[in-house]
Structure formats: structure tokens, C-alpha cells
Length: 289
Image 1 (cartoon, rainbow, N blue to C red):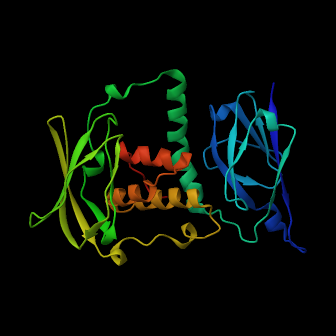
Image 2 (cartoon, helix red, strand yellow):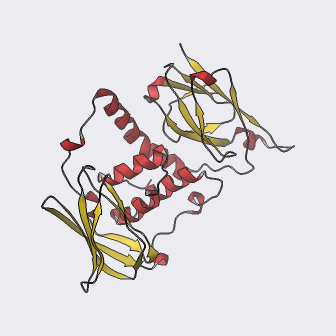
Image 3 (cartoon, helix red, strand yellow):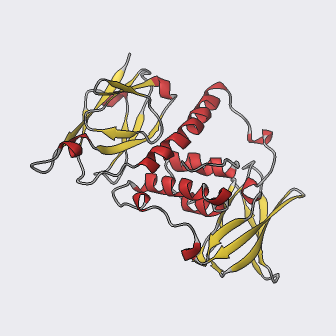
């Protein structure tokens, strides 16, 4: 038995243009199962469901699996909307914003993340891989990284999340900013540090294995400037963080991947942020369009 979500949106101003009427009003933040478990109809077009798919006025989303559920992020709501089989008789209504938020770089974000997300979903359905099967490693430190200076935290991730690691950060002169901090769960966020311009050594040790890398701390003005279209307030915050981190990680042969990880490392992460964070930790490289 299938069920569907019909997206109706309210025009909140008179004389609204046809461009607004057709404009995006949100996106798919998450969904259960595989993309093939859903059908998205936009006018006469069938649109493949994907993570971060933009939503338009009048879109129809049909779940082919009665256990399916969707999480939608709409621009006029602070919290995401969860849609389950129990809601199938209702439609979703929201206001169309005056200013759209979608862009070619957000298209690129979806194109980059969708295959990774789909592969993860396929893996979950076919087998459950134990963390014990993974080898310890820190791909983020495989190439020199650049961070912005200032009073700030830094984030670091490693393969094999069950592995408890020790982390140290020292300046070129040998001064220890972090001495044997312990990290677990595959992700570590430092306390606030006074990072001044210079070269640092970041070292991770686990069960006799040691990985180290060079980190250059530079003036924030010298880092690549995030494009204005990825800084618009009209872009919902979780998507904005995902797109900014993805764009930054793809700059200059990946030397800002550690900085990109920092953008995503907060406590509350959406599905797209989590997907990208895990991909960066695993060493995935992204290419700019």
C-alpha cells in the first residue's frame, strides 16, 4: 500500500510572480530506506528522490513502502517536518519565501552527496559491518592542513570509532597546546585554543599506532572565501553548513578538510551533515564543479 505527501504552499503577497510560485521552498532532509522506495512527481516529471532534494510548490512525494517516512526542511519553519504513513491524509502547507535559496553550488552539493548516501543505505540493508573490521587511521592528516587563527576549537576524526586515541598538538618550537587529550567515538573536539599563525604538529596515537600531520595556522582572511550564494540567510542552516563545508573541503587539493570538519562537528547534525562528516573522516575527496 502506498501513501503520498502533497506539498501545497501559500502565496503570502499579492501580485506574486510566477517565478516565486515555482520557486523552491525547502528540501528533503532525510528519509528512511532507499530512494527507490519513493516517487517524486513534479508536474509531468518524475524526479529521483535524494538527500537534500529541493522541494517545489505542488510537488507530490509518494512512498511505495508503507513503513517509509520523510523528514522535510521548509524555509518558513525553524524545525524539520517529519512525515509518516499516519499523516497520509494531510497536505503540507507553507509560505513561499520572497527570495529563493537554491543555486548551482547547491545542485553540486546534492550531486556530490547523493551517491555516498545511497551507497550507505544499500550497505545498511545488505549487511551490518562491525567497526572492528576497520583499520585505525586518520586520513584527514594524510596531507598538510590549513586552519584559521584565533581563539577557537578544532575537530579531528579517525577511522574505527571504537578505538580510544590520544591526541597532542604542538607548535614548531615544541610548545604543547594539547597534551595527551583522549578522544573516543571517532570524533574529537578540542577545548578552546589560542591558535596563532604558524606551523603545528598534530599527533594521534592508538594502541601503539601513531599518525601525525602538519597543520598550518593562517589569518582567516587568507582562507578561501565562501561564495555569497552559500552564505545567504534564506538557505536553511543545516544545508548551509553542509554546502559550505563541502565547498571548503574541495579547495586546493583538500588542504581545508580539517577546517571543513570543524563546520560540521557541532552536537546537532542533520543527515547531510553526518554523511559529509563521515565521508571526510574516511578520506573522501571532492572535486569542485
